[in-house]
Image (tube, rainbow, N blue to C red):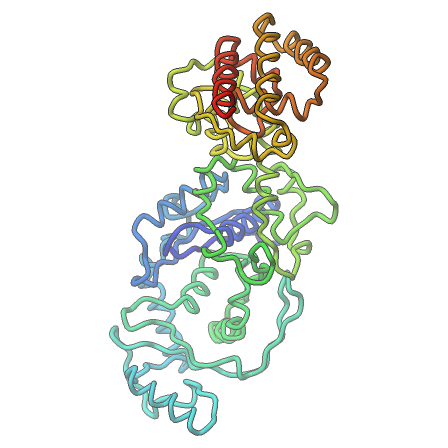
Amino acid sequence: MSTIRTRFAPSPTGFMHVGGARTALFAWLIARQAGGQFILRIEDTDQARLVSQSVDHIIKTLSVLGIDYDEGPDKNGPYGPYTQSQRLDIYHSWAKKLIDQGRAYTDPYSKEEIDNFKLQAKKDKKLFLYRDIRPDKPIKWQIGLPLRFLSDPKQYTWQDAVMGELSAGSEAIDDFILIKSDGYPTYNFGHIIDDYLMRCTHVIRSQEFIASTPKFLNLYEALNIEKPILATLPPILNNDGKKKLSKRDGAKDILEYINQGYLPETIINFLASLGWNDGTVKEIFSIDELISSFSLKRVQKAGAIFDENRLKWMNGYYIRQLDQQTLYQKMLPFWPEEAKNYDEQYKQKILNILQDRLKFGQELKDLSIFFFEDQPINLDLINNNKLLSKLGSDQLVNLLQNSYNELSKTEFNVDQLVINLNQLLDQTNQKPSILFSLIRIAITQVQSSPGLADTMEILGQQKTLRRIQETISALENKL
């Protein structure tokens, strides 16, 4: 059996999106599982659409995710170069073979002439096909004129490793461009030559290429090339499952998720679950488990829904598994500006009680800001609370004054605070949902926070009592 060699071949026309990253991951898993090689190839033949720094961005994204490649534009290998714009002589030599075989011809027509052909076909109520307007006499090919493949239309049936048996009639095959007028190959030509020369055993890509597969099969035959294993991945759908995920639906650059504080291991696990499972209800996989479990046979045919809430849940799970020092290092970019005036020990204490609540790094600022800076008193938090809004200002003041008096006599450690808070419940004859919510709002100016005793211990007695007193004063001003 030949060595398994898979590839990821992006066009550097923008950021690395979710679909591209998933394609790279699946190809990487197949190679790593088989002890084969994974290749990065840059397909930059559409010169008009190139985006500056896109190649660096792709390489950085793969590196951050831990998707390492064995050969690529920055890793020499036996089948390079691995950037298509550096391989033009190779494509031209293969194009010459097709010309010599009578399977390629120079397209002499201008855009205006082709538009007229299309218009006439429409008038005649016929399907426009390039193979119907092949020139009568061959024209010597040269840069500046497109070179077209002379197709041999026929019906095809082929096996897709994910979609199963697929077929198409001869109408799906037409004469397509091999080399553009600028001398660069089209995708339809370049990837077939490169996959063959780079000895790729698998070609994994999205569903948009299914319609073109009969053309590829026709070209494989003309070149006398054995086709690789073809695998078509299901589309990634937006949250309601009605259309393909797009920027309008909130699709982000993979590095944007990283910059928001999503962990690489989360993104890998989440991407793997978009259209694949191991046949169980298991949702969390280590990298080693993914490598050992992954199979194209378990990739589904139907679209996979991109559920960002599930991504947050999964990231929260991974955050909870981190030890304190690792969590602290990963959260360094996400502290509020005010945290710079506090030492690591203080921030470690905050992370210790926030770890179970964090879903991604950028949440840290809002979840922790009140530990570093007094927040404006917002009595609407009380007014909008279903239970607290039923109490009058005088009742609220009385509850907070009793709390102030009791807490001023309390040692500010969690164990003692828990005892005194429970005593306050007995003294005030109130439920935790009322008393504790009121104290929490007074000292944090948020509706929800970590455990009240934990929060108060970190804030300390002086800051806690001062904030309670300031809230009392605000309420008294309403009386």
